[in-house]
Length: 371
Ligand SMILES: *Cc1c(COP(=O)(O)O)cnc(C)c1O
Image (cartoon, rainbow, N blue to C red; front, side, top):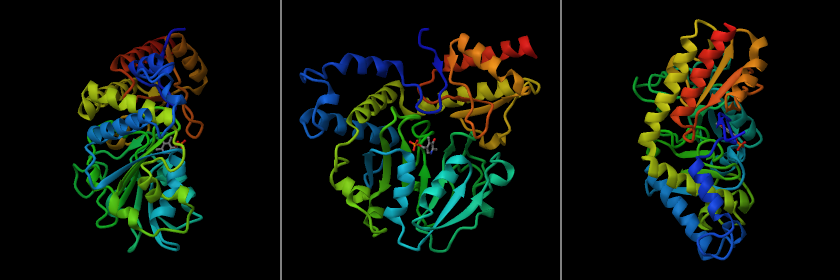
């Protein structure tokens, strides 16, 4: 089988151009006499890789100077726990807005450390919509408000029209309290106003590269907070002081993410990926909605994710047939997460528009054969 269109949710498809560059550079990185994965993270070669990755990510996302960028080992889940240790004093409240599985995970991670308050939850309606801002019960003195920008499993994303104070504003207004957002599965999919957030974090394995490295973008003044007693290795300020090299960083993963940043910039940056994401997701939702009930997506259309499209076949008995035929057609990793069942197509930046066109055509053909 040649390379298929891979709709995996994470680890997810990488741009083929990036894999080719990595392949070319695997044995020897730019006349260094060794692979980058074999060289010291303190040597000039890797320091250059690291510096370029940060500069490219800053350019890609227009990160303001008063924000630090960290590349850290540990996945997004690790950061979910660490943010409590770093930014909330013992006993201090932290507000959580839960719009799906990952919001619940984030909440679970901080339970031992903070007095967490669920300011709003979409669980009552099966995470099919986002509770309107007017109904959120925020705490007076919360250390931060945490949201999940895009729920990877439930396929729900904060979009303009989600129910915020202003109709065209995708970002929740939470006043003076810093807004913390898990952007694991939608970072770099469209322009991002970093200045509206206190902290943005994500594992790289959805939209930024390989698993094994997380990216953290944090307002520098927040790093001066006392937080809670913690080892140096769990201290973001220490990581910043050491330029993300407090201990041996996941250098190969960092390098691969850096290649992805360069590829995104060369393709036209986040504006171009916003355009492609809109085209891809619209095509897929139109295919589902136009199927007369053969396929179904239950998410409120105003907050449907542009990155992860969960859908169900009207007859669950066809699921295995669907997956097998899709595979035959060169379309893989469409099985939904066990939390939700059904199917899911993850269509991150590395998924070309042609891949989604192929999936839509396959779905229509499958319906013709089994509808
Ligand atoms: C995948 C994912 C996570 C978990 O990431 P790990 O790197 O496995 O810890 C957390 N949040 C969101 C939104 C995700 O998509």
